[in-house]
Length: 302
Length: 337
Image (cartoon, rainbow over all chains, first blue to last red; front, side, top):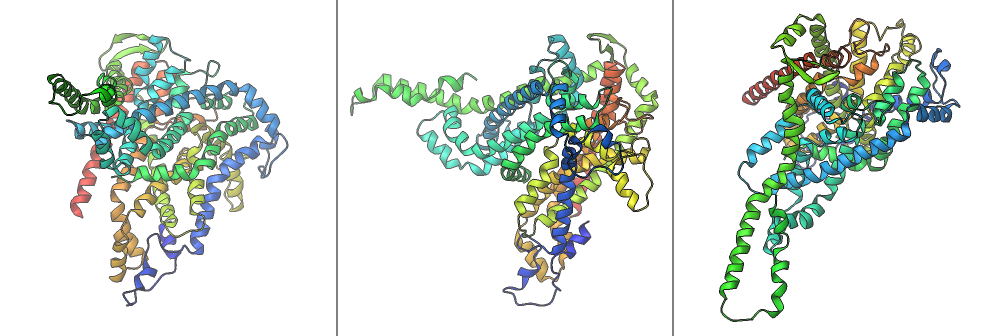
């Protein structure tokens, strides 16, 4: 992979050059124009990224017989709305959409709120044990939540929460990533002087959060909210364990249930998969730029 | 916790009497007391509010992260049935000896490792290449970045279900395309290597673009003058990549390796939904059963939650080993540079 990339831009031979403008053409950084090879590779990646999604829609617009023929279909058939309708009803997707929107919305909003105040404390307030506490936060990012499912399942059984949405919401509120993300953002986005000025005016910590931190953090809060919404929307293992397909499923549980029925109609499954994915693709199409910016911002350590 | 409520807006509250206050007279004892009380409250606020701000995260983590993790160890020493998860019978280490004697545990461990390598290595290499390209001046660069994230927006369930069809043996798109280069239909379900490759490809598809963005962010943070001085020293493009880009990305690379490794060690949804037989065994001969799937099979299909806990705890130990290995490697790398 990487070897082809290096050929793509015009290779300048390391000739002795005038100091002024010479190095400009030899930079590998952000100011070089991409060559045709780069565009070809990008086009391939674009196709690779989109093809499974487009083909989901193509398969959803066909019927089961057509999907059991060679060659596979490359263009849309006429069965799309029929399948979408069937999948919607078979998988109980209407209720699943309401459930998932509720779960993802509550969870994202809570995470954003808690992460912002915690991130603010870590970024801008001085207190004893701050370093150690931050280390714990980073450490918890390394512990996958999947390992905790068994006791959580026992808790849910004990509380009789099976098939209830709080069983999915509460464990999803633990987001070390969110705390880390907001801390990184506030470190550079919130000047200490503003906080001090607010303090001079006699504002309590809580007022500072409300009137200074939240306004300053708004862009990052929006991005974190979207990321958390996507993550909770797509979460599979835990909802799959505590929510049954026939009780109050999330979209992912319902869609997976379509695939695990006894009479698998592939075009129907694809219709369900399409329905479960479209809302998020829509969000990405509208806010893609902000989400990309947010992910890249969260990636650079401060 | 209480501080943040009762200290809200002290000046507004106390200063309400401001207009009627005697202007220039000597400070009354009462006012001094008031000020002292205010400043005590102020001190308390400064001292305790940081803890109030971080405590919700830690409380939630304690309840839904730490406690379950520890309790898993406790449960792994008991016999617990799925049907009565609150009845626990002490069995000591028997759950562990049972899984160590189970060939499917070792099979799952090996599959997890293979699929982990098959998914992580190409994913990160491609992400690196992609980031390198995206770092050039491009027409429509935002467009490409958003497109690269489309798979990330797709759920595991949706992605796995469509890949099952694309990897179909008889009517799948991939076998159809391979037919043109003279490759006979590959049994992506039943062949061990082929099925593990297919499951890995779901992971690769979903995460390459995301990792590329992370590398890109790190690349953009590299100061330009490093490249300029390298160019002045006569380094060509490839040498610049090797000697400037890669070393600067080292922390980011380690970070993505750790995150991808953790993700790979937990794979569950992809192999579960890739199975055409709709079981939790990861194929008819367990050919692509991962540890995550094995845990689910033991706990929820065979209904042995105690044994599943033992598997979870083993997975945790594996993660700790990975973490230690990672810190040793990164320290070595730092020492060598």
